[in-house]
Amino acid sequence: MVGADIYGWALKASSGELSSDELARLRPAREALKRSLSEFPAEARPYYQHLVRLALAAEERGST
Image (cartoon, rainbow, N blue to C red; front, side, top):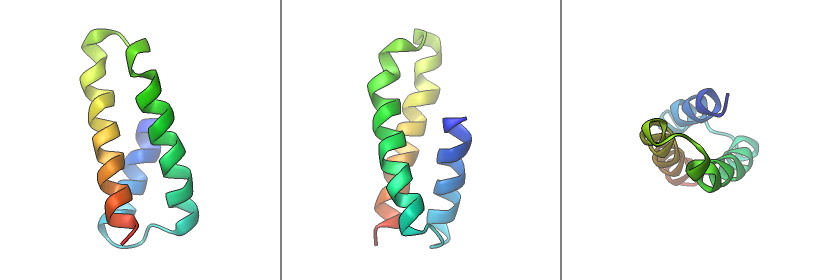
């Protein structure tokens, strides 16, 4: 479900609608996902690495 959450937060950030509460939940979700990347099968990692990058972009956009 973290993928759906990050995608939703990224959509909100892109339209300037990400709330401070959502931003506060996005950061730990991204950090937890980043820490767990090595646990995924190698062939699945690119998808989750993309989600980490998407979350970072959403954080940058949402914190402005």
